[in-house]
Length: 458
Image 1 (cartoon, rainbow, N blue to C red):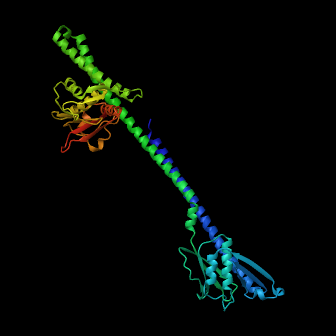
Image 2: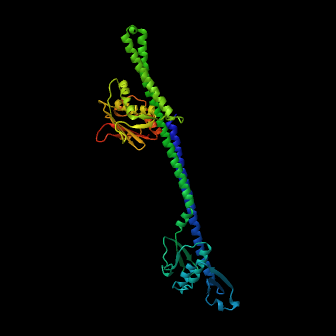
Image 3: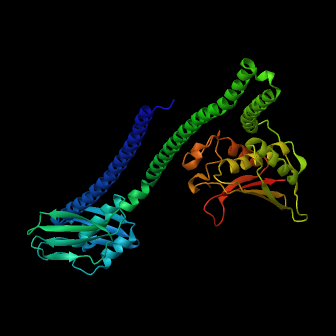
């Protein structure tokens, strides 16, 4: 049994869980991203500090030097390192570069090698920085500049950095102090690319969970709708069955308790009434059984060569017997070679009942004198049977649903008309068993009426 309160509680729990998953995943991804940015910032700051420390060592230890190996070229600091006497050299540091673009720019950039005011070795700092960046695995474009505290720019690389991040390093060992500012391209795109697998996986998982939840909700509501339709069907069919049963019982009581049995004319009238009630009851039972048989996988069509004209000719007497008056049905049958009839291979019994159901609805849902026309056409192996009426019509919003099991229109004049909700569903089943379809359209140019079309492979 559907419990609204339980469903709402479970649905809220699922929604909250999905939101929690999204939130936790977003927080986790954000923390990972922030961690990568912190590591990157730490590596850049460490490279700046290492470059400043190495430059200070070279500047303050006159007996020490450094050799930078770059392709086939060698650069020394100080420049006269190679000409010094070995006894005058305290230490030598050797570095080999593989990042040609950075060093090319450093060596080709026009600018001072030393700061004349403080003796700061600009070239050594930049080369040390390049080597430290390379050792840390940082290969993003960057540019450096040196500024005194009085906003006096000592040197600035002319290289343009896109989407830069700014880092700075204060060199307090100089008088006056100097600040090195570094602009380096933001690595967020690379970080997002590295995390793309996790982001895509989480997004797909959340999307699948959301779609699955949505599908389950729609299925539950669909089942609830079907359950309500089943209840309506049970209610309707109960009343439908009670009417002929009550009539038959009343007639039977009259025959048993009163003297009608001694009057042949009245007895015959009562018996005819009883037979009509039993026929009505039998027709309803056959409709329910027919739908049950149609839904069975064991159901097999018994096709035979039959005449559509003969099938239609049987419908008028059946309608007259049900409604107690003559119901004229016009026909227009053409198969492309002969007019007046269409021969087809079909299950005569089920096709006849399907057509009768539509004709019956045409009479049942008509508030005036019924005018019904049946048009038959053959197109290759497809036979189309169109039934046009002048009834109350079918709202556009209901046309797709009237062929569903148990479904009945519950608005307007339709709600006052009895029915089980199985007739048009049965028609759909018969058409599909014949490899075809059934559809409904409004009558062109009119405000009421409908055209039902059965298409079958015959």
